[in-house]
Length: 223
Image (cartoon, rainbow, N blue to C red; front, side, top):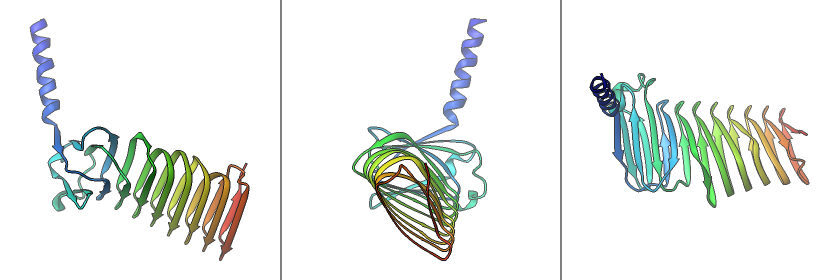
C-alpha cells in the first residue's frame, strides 16, 4: 500500500512539473505585459519566468534594450484564461500593463523611484516604499498602490483610475482629464489640476492644497 501511494505521489509530482514551464530571462529593468495576461512579480536574485496553464508554451518573452515584453502568440490571444505567469526579477524601474493585462507585485518594492503605467483596461497592484513614484493611467485602466512615498506625480486620462488612499505621500502633483478618478493621501503639499469631469479625493489633511478645476472637474477633501 505504501509503495502504491509513493508511486501515486511521484506521478502527481511529475504531472505538475510537466505542466510548468520555466525560462531564464536576460537583464531587464522594465516590464510590459499585453493580451490580458495575469502576471505576478516577485523580487529575487535572478530574472526568471514560470508559466503554468494549458497555453503555457504560447506565452512569449522578449528582452530588448532592458525592456521585458510579455505577450501571447497571435494564434492564442483570445485563449489565455488558464495561463498564470510568475516573473522573478532583480530590479524594476517601470511596470507597464496594457490590453487588459493584470500585474500584481508580490514583493514590497523598496527603492528610490518607480514608474507605474496602465492603459486599455489593464490593472496593476503594488506595495511600495519609495522616494519618488510616477503614475500614468488611462483608457479605463486601474492602478492600486499602498505603502509610502515622499513625492508622487500622477497623470490620469480617459477614465483611468488610481486607488492610492493607502499610499502615504508627503507631496503629490496630480493631473486628471476626461473622467478620470483618483484617491490620494498627502500630508504636505497637493497640486491638483482636474479637467472635464475628473475627480480627485484628497485624504491626509495636506498643509497646502492648490487646485485648478475646469469643465466639471472636482477636488474633494476627505477626512
